Length: 446
Image 1 (cartoon, rainbow, N blue to C red):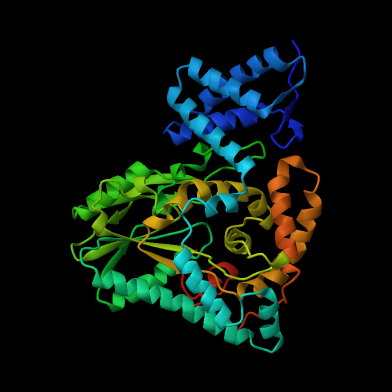
Image 2 (spheres, one colour; image 1 turned 180 degrees about the vertical axis):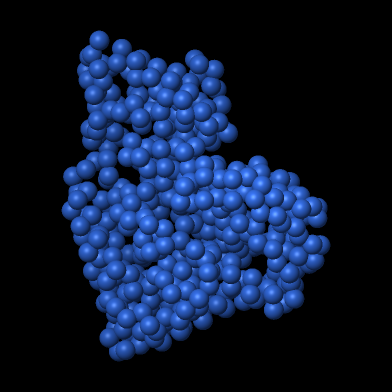
């Protein structure tokens, strides 16, 4: 029997066929419906491969849609209807990604906080930082320290306003700070807690990072990279149960997660919340409904933070928020988590997939939106990362499996080459949230 060797992707490129990609896709669909049996996923991938070889082996290649048809067939025939449904939804999402660029699709979903964006744009115009040219011009005049002060003040005012609303709204028992990766959630949560304490409110922080499933239980791709960005990477059922128990005044024992080993240990940290105290949660997926299912909506106040930078860059186009967060995460993870910047680049498609599917659609459920972008982060990132992006653009230019990494590397390289670099970051105070990423933050958040 002949063997299938290649896959024709939707854009026409040809890549080698690997059973590992099939097994990972099946396991990912299983995780979405609560299953975590990797061995069964591999068995099903074997069946898919055998059927593909019988059907397309003589041609040595098959289109991605043809392969996905076979996967659905094998799942259904083996009695995995729920997994098949999750896989079909994943497949539909991939088709949509191919047809429409992510940022164009988001524009039509109604999930963009236009009022907040307009306020941010007006602020940028008023402070002469709504284009890179203007930012560079202010830097050339020696105004970088002024830009830092102005930007940080706007950010602090956002948090103060959120705190005022929470303090004046009766019955709030849970405050959630949510937002996409590297938007500044951790420092924002810390600062919000400080302001709430000045209002006489007691706070107890529930660290949901301790509720991650063991790393080996997450889907893994052909490059050995784990997808731990989805809500299902967290034990949502246990989080919800513990929140309910805390609101009832009961003591709980939370897990403890070791990020170095990728292992979770249950029943480790004792917690209790008094009637006059508020549960404070900082979470990537804090707006995901399953986390707070069954809890009175009026008891929850949701803060959403995003890097809503309103500045035009190359080709007179607005700079993408995701590119700011990509750079932040590269610098932070290399400093504090032993994660090389290139790993962040090649992992970023998982980040974006989770954001577009599980985070951005919930933006309008937030009670208040904070802008976490600061114009001065671009000149700070330029000397730290520009050479990397130049290297990655060349490295991935002809690798169809890394098309996403190439596009991002090229785009960010073009952006950073326009920015006047700032080597001396001393004008940035230790309380600035950007130091969560570049180092030197006064708060212990890592």
